[in-house]
Image (cartoon, rainbow, N blue to C red; front, top):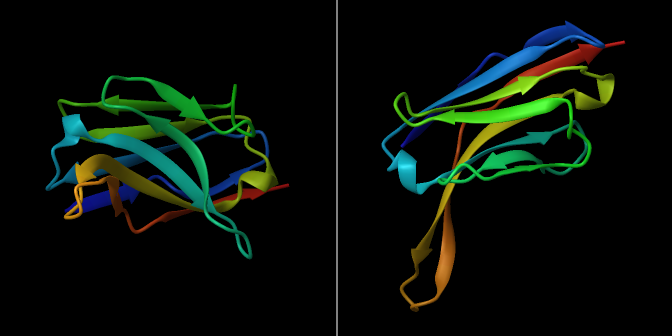
Amino acid sequence: VQLQASGGGLVQAGGSLRLSCAASGIAFHMNTMGWYRQATGKQRELVATVSSRGAKNYADSVKGRFIISRDSAKNTVDLQMSSLTPEDTAVYYCNARRPVVAGTGSLTQLNYWGQGTLVTVSS
């Protein structure tokens, strides 16, 4: 399984960036795909997810500024980020997850993570 994230970099406040994640080795159509981020000294937090059916979920802090999209033909998930602020500075991680039945018979989530891409927003 590989989740290859790209597109991070340095941008000025108010600018835009587009992150992309290419997935391989998973049944892409069965997975909820998402982006999470972790700023220095903080816990990893959800940014946005898009389910296998296309339902989207955003953190309140990025609503109206970020757009997540998935392309099942290319097995990619993108995050278009606009109106960036220094508070958006973080390492952004691509995530794939789907429900699986554990050995105990209970339902759990199988998660895969990409290597992370750094987004730095200067003021």
